[in-house]
Length: 133
Image: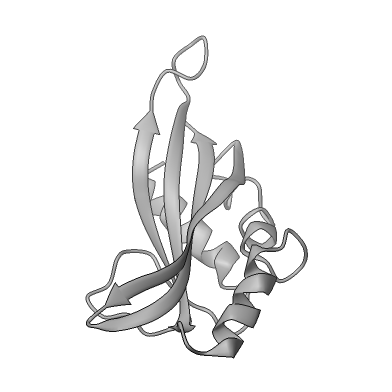
């Protein structure tokens, strides 16, 4: 299993959200609505045999200009824990196509404005924990 396999599987799960573009790496250009997947950290030796690691991914979602009311309304749906949300999509396949033991969205932070190329977008960052060997 490679980290790229985990990213690909996360992207596959996120692609179930209608209208959301998903990229497995950080792009040069942002084209909202978009979800971008990046590895944040890796914690090793998470099991007695030291064979499991905990991978933390950051999924940044950029929806539209901050001034757009629809961007804020759409973010409400993506933040809620039910159907149509980032959490629901990511956790829809807990094994990430057989590459992981478990995956879950731990928290959401940095909800608000992010400036990209002098444009302020409404965004949120989701922390995703993956346990795999």
